[in-house]
Picture 1 (spheres, helix red, strand yellow):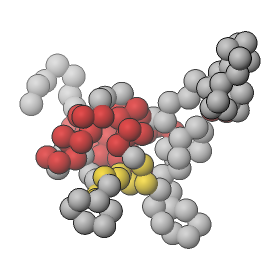
Picture 2 (cartoon, helix red, strand yellow):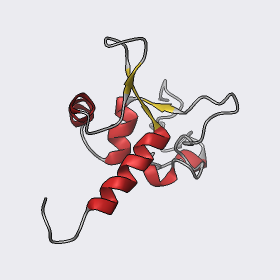
Picture 3 (tube, one colour):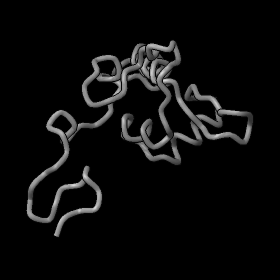
Length: 112
């Protein structure tokens, strides 16, 4: 029996996902490298690459509820499309910059 979804492995053990996307997590480290994640640079039309909350949660290895809470609190840079009730999105370059800033603030052994 085969999977209805081409990105999921088939029951017979054959993996139909392209080799470059197998076992690939969209982490901030690969936002700009092309790899398996979306690129953080603006597209050819100049629009920034947007990420959904689930994509951000996977890339940061946190829960989706943490992403929503951090965005609501202003801890994570985000935007709402079309107004306050619109879908929550994240600019990949902003997430990368935020992560780099958080890493720069961290000092081993010292808690804020």
